[in-house]
Image 1: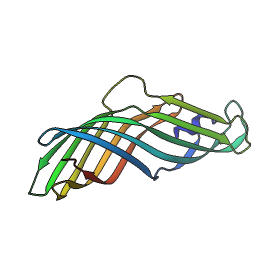
Image 2: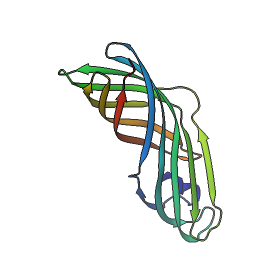
Image 3: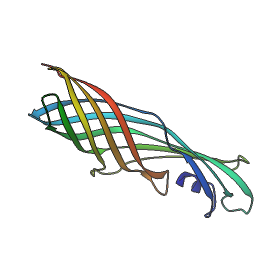
Length: 174
């Protein structure tokens, strides 16, 4: 909803549809047993919001629609804690170097705004937990939850934490 603030004065009301799809492709290397490094690329589709208020710099009542999406590479360290022969717990910590894009427009079509921003610096902003099951010596199935923290720029694009739940397949090269 913070993206609507780009075209509306303070005090607006907002409702958001923040349940969207995403995808992630990753590869990695197991450095030692149960400790790996992974490089991935993720893209989060548009989250949208509708807000009501007054247009920026006016007293005209309007409705605004806004969108927010993000994408980029992540570098992570992934640890696995074996629980049984095939099951294990997964923990992840990493750096997500995002590019965020947002757009907002009022119902009158005045002053449409589109902005993008890229994450500066390198700080830990990705954590995750999950389960893995080995279906063979060379293949695992993973169910993971990841949080990408503080994606976007409050002043330029709006900012959000992105929670990502995924079901993935891991192939281990021998």
